[in-house]
Length: 152
Picture (cartoon, one colour):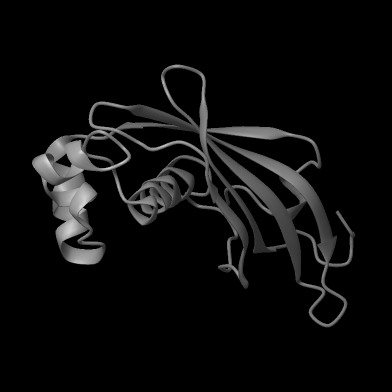
């Protein structure tokens, strides 16, 4: 069994990997899900306040979710999430940017109504190659307990 509720320590930070955004994937994602001109058209993007093509914030979130699941929660006792508390897009993600993701454990508690699982509050940070935080996501996740009743 992989990562479970008991393994998550408040204050710990999990390195989740990195991803480099290409022009092709930025445009492909945006054409399907967020077809704003500054995501799909080089000329329109150059004339926008961003001064060039940028990734959709939803694309950035999707990439981060993939990094989290593949590199941190693979084989874990994850039971999904009741939702996102906050998303902040702080800097645009541009063609060629490499975003490194970390996931900090902020808080956790065992469920009172379902003591075989617990709620874990986390903060995801996406940091570009210049050391700038480009996105922050605060969310909660449900994880099964390896040893229900032990109150990890």
